[in-house]
Image 1 (cartoon, rainbow, N blue to C red):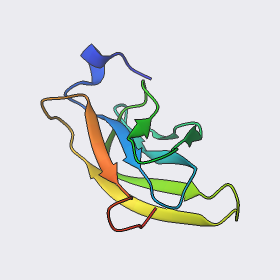
Image 2: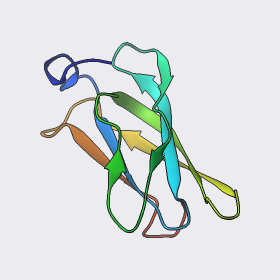
Image 3: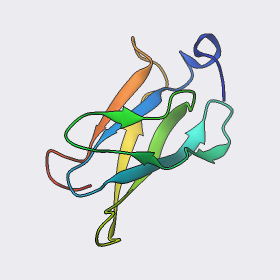
Length: 98
């Protein structure tokens, strides 16, 4: 993990919104070009959720799991190397992909 000053222009934190999934995790290349995954995190309701302190850039692979059925869904999201804020939103809810 990196502090915001180290990673702010070399990756972003990822927030996810889901439709079917009750928990998710994000995997991809971090600010050190090392493949990493966040821990699983809850995605209740229609908000945006993520794990602070995990920085990604390029394509990330997001897995969401439904707590009742155990069904897993997957989406890919592209994370910019730099932007004005520290968080990139990956919407798996709008098209009910995640």
